[in-house]
Length: 180
Length: 180
Image (cartoon, rainbow over all chains, first blue to last red; front, side, top):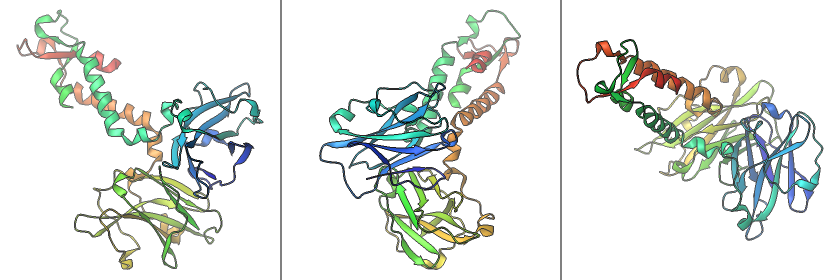
């Protein structure tokens, strides 16, 4: 039903089924993984009204499994690219794999897919840094960052009339920041 | 031998074989595509000493096919994610699909894979903006951009002693920019 692809490696199309509604792919050498693609094979759709939540699971320093919600796949959006390279220091989130007790190996992480009601998925919030779609709006993001910067910098802006005498301090005309 | 996946859509595993060593996937509604994953299915490896160059082909305003080299897949690196959303205004590059005369439909682009000698691939340069690995260094890129900005803004910096009288113009202390 599902496939998993680590960018640069061979595709995996045979997850381990750890419960009726739960599937797990192993990700060996996960510290060298940047992007993971999770997709439906197109053979079996989700049952009506259901979809899959996609989790990344990695062992913390004490070997305990940390689970993070990456996002979702559904019949309407049957594939997604996730960025996992920034997640390894993040906090764990609630997850439905609690009782699975998957064996943790220091260098092996997992992708877990849990088949759930779409209504239930709609109430879950993935970790923001995993969304590759946010990278799509790169220009937008940059623009927003610069707007923030202008607002931040402007809060320090002074006119010459307000300046305290300190002839050595350098000032940048605010319109230069704005033009850039 | 190859699969192709548009992020958000169903996987395609049956390219059109347009020559003995050339394979093509159609990408309908390509203007709404951000990322494309190209991968080997793992069934048949490349012959010894060979690999695949991966091209994106889209119709320009006059309906002519524009080809751009995205990158490569090889037995050692059997999958890759490419960002195509920034490529639609780029210039075409040399490509080996010249005589194919693929039918061009305004909203349909193609991914073309050409099986070639690794030595030949090593002499080809993909369009830089297609590499998703560059997205990995997002923070680095942002830092560089801000450094550039500081250098740019600093070139306008003045001290109070150098200021021409204009009490209404706003100035931002340079150290605010630097701290940010």
